[in-house]
Amino acid sequence: MMAEKTTNTTTEQIIVQISRNVKKYRLMRKMTQFDLASAIGIEAQYYGQLERGERHFQIDKIIKICSVLQVGIQDLVELTPVDSSRKSSARHTLERLLPLFGSCSDTGLSEEQLLALEKFITEILPLIK
Image 1: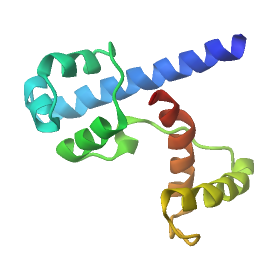
Image 2: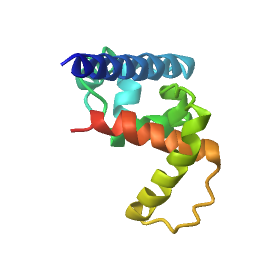
Image 3: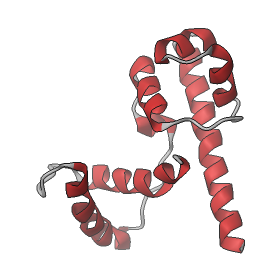
């Protein structure tokens, strides 16, 4: 039961982080909530709920937001470094997972990119239900 609470806290922290960073980059681009909502194809009221953390961003909306705001997903979600002792196992796990995404075994991704992908898979994808 304790682990579940920790997971929920981590999930909530990620949701808040995404919401704050989207707002930060939206304001840096001098866009209103209406402007960004229109650009990603949703109602302004719904977008406001997303930005306030009342609703959860869906991955397709995050991708559109990144495109409109010209930022990378790593700008919206601050990824914590993975312990170097886990690098080998992370690479092994991702090399097994990548073919499931239609990639070849030689991905050409750097160690940092693979670790970011692992973090995304383990921390962000569970938010998408």
